Image (cartoon, rainbow, N blue to C red; front, side, top):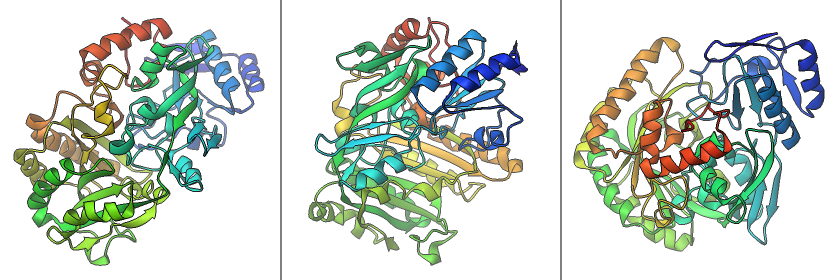
Length: 471
């Protein structure tokens, strides 16, 4: 059997080697001729169309170790799949071995200690659905289908970020399969350098097969959004920027420019119309939340106020409709020190030219809270000083519309360029090159990450990610 890497190098695997690997796995080994192969190679971003030579569907940590050792012995390129949600599509490589962890969905909940131990195939929707039984919530992402590993290793913005920090800030420990096929434990007291790098350094240092997190009381929260016509977007965004920065830490909010989807929670008269919406989640006393959100709900007033008490597990799914599966995706993102009037004007003007009804612009307010109290050197995720984050997401379904949508995303982000920081949240961006990765981490963190890479992965075995090359 012949396999090619992304660089078109060739390695030859004989049938005996493949049978041996297949017999070793408790999970399964897929090849292009297998009926499940086509579905197994798909990821969230439909722009990604890569054909791995082998997919090892792992059932446990021993399978991950066996796959790493097999790839090393046979000089195969390796990609690692958790939720497969990252816009880069780096979970899948051409001609190599995909180590697929998506079937590993074990979850142990300790409701007394308020901790969980999660396997890497879980999504945040699955985690928070189970936690809801105990009135608890994990500080996961904004979309329920996002996988636990990718989000956490890249930092982990989400609905609880202002009260409880990033996903990686809530990580207590991790089990990691290293590039030489060994299993190590990382925590504040054991392999502390690796633990530092796992909290923001991405998948550069190994395969995490188990995550231990702190979780938090958040049974019923106040959440939802208020909707205004796009014609009033300037005034709404100017109001919201001040409202957000003066809001209590229990409140995480953001602004959206979008075409209203035909979703049950959107008034029928708004379906298909360009709108500005402010989303909000208050994770605290409902009475205090009603008071904190009153100015937002009264401003305008909105044409629709959809904020209401709801289980946190419902909050975890409420943005899913905006980023549907089987769509082609192209994203641009950068932090904002402030939401200046010039940025507001540019975003509104260019959003109006969006070629797809799925295109959207998001401004998140993640700072001024728990995330910002952690020092930039405490974790590999060092970009904690920025209160806002800009995300431009182009989504479309017809490949003939690719050029128009990619061009739109680039134009709108370029227009916002004078207002964005020289820093970015890598979970939100595609493959922008090594220089961009270095800039996104910041010089000080990046040099420390290179030293860690030299220790744990000096051959860059784990390179299909937002890569930190050995130095």
